[in-house]
Image (cartoon, rainbow, N blue to C red):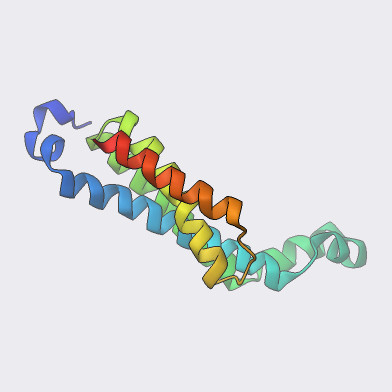
Amino acid sequence: MTDPSTNPALATSPWIAAAMIAAIILASTAGEVLTAAAMKSIGDLDEIRARSGLKGAIRAVITCPLFFAGVGFLALAFFSLLFALNHLSLGLVAPASASLTLVTNAIAAKFFLHENVDKRRWTAAVLVCIGVYFLAH
């Protein structure tokens, strides 16, 4: 494991830290949007289960390419998180990536999934951005 204190380039470069956190955020958002799109395209799993049983519901999920694309991006986000935690402090990576993912998910939900994102959620997203700014400074 690489200790940030033994590698000053990683410990001091805000651009590298930002890139690592951005990779987590983008991969996580893509994974969550693709998984949500997959589940919307599949339909109500309870209805599928009632009609075709549990095997039918499982078949509906595992035959959806969007689902596997989403899982792939979520796996990429997880390994990006591991890489970032190997080089940066948990106190920065965890809150920044988790909270900024909330912001990107709100944006993606509005523009890609055409969901209704209300004023409270946008306010929360702005407050999260302010919090991350204070965390980084």
